[in-house]
Image (cartoon, rainbow, N blue to C red):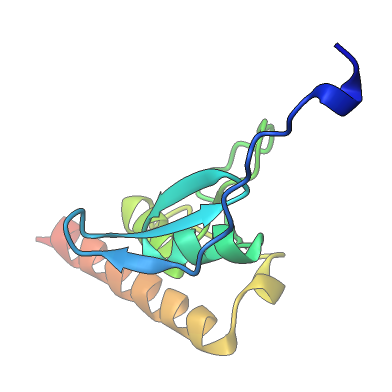
Length: 120
């Protein structure tokens, strides 16, 4: 069969992201696939970009991948899991001044609470 007789599969058009109330998630069709998930994830797929927040939570310098999150909430979760070793040193350019201030304040509070408990 030669190429001019092959029919291309019909492509469905991309859609604008919308909220699916039944599934309680966002949905978008892109390049003949459907993506569902959080608003941040779906809009990242829609725009073909995304957020990237690198950080460190280990003193292990040999890593196969850089620790990171795709939302600021994910960064806060990493900080909560390991406030003693959490750091964004060298990666500050990925964060706003407000985010840096919040991370420092949360980390200081977590560490001081831990010290208070150890002193009891």
